[in-house]
Length: 311
Figure 1 (tube, rainbow, N blue to C red):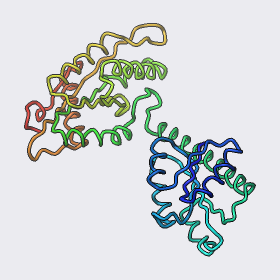
Figure 2: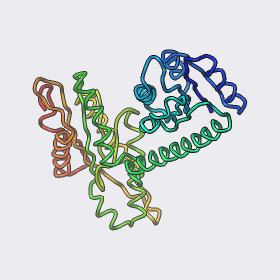
Figure 3: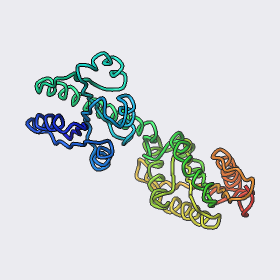
Figure 4: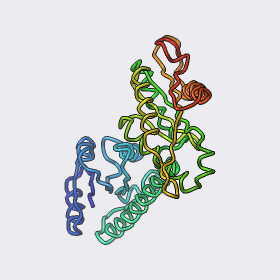
């Protein structure tokens, strides 16, 4: 494990380095905070041993600086203090993970580092578990696509980029025509296969940076950044053709055809035009319902998203 030792006193820095290398740690040293920053930019150094009263900063300020240098890293901060500083030990504990009061003993240092390593492993495991749980919460289990919550969450940065760069943005809302009746006729297994099948088709059609998710039981939503209405309509037509051309096998082996209705809305940058995710959905949903009402298996554009300047 990498350890960074920060101490402006060369003799003490060498002493700690010798102890650590004797226990097979990868050791990096810095005599100033500027030098420490250079090391931290190149290496993660999850454990940091630092002198409490570095000349450049007070102990508390040094701790805050170390915490915010590389925000994504998990760090364990062990501070070294002198006997004369032991009165400030309780205050130090509020900003550090551990404290060693001099004179420094090798056995005690190794014991403290062993505790630090266990803490870091635990924190890492907790972060990994949280990441997995977050991913599970954000994914639709059946299709592997983003769910509605994830679409709301991850559309935010894309909408911000669209506003900032004054780019067009299109949204498709795809409804599987008569899907409830088909699922009732062919069963739950067919229902699941059909949804996974359509999800796979959509993945193959949209671009890697388009956002795609399952919006409702039998609906999918696709966000198309930097896409004009005409280009979005072409994508929507490809979706219809792909869905209609590839039946989903029923339990008895018979091909079951699935059709779709696509509602399309395009936002164009313009003065006073508000870009809002819910408004995009409402416009695409209205268009989708019109497509279904007109017989399905077709693309319908929203009335307000057909010409630049309207939103």
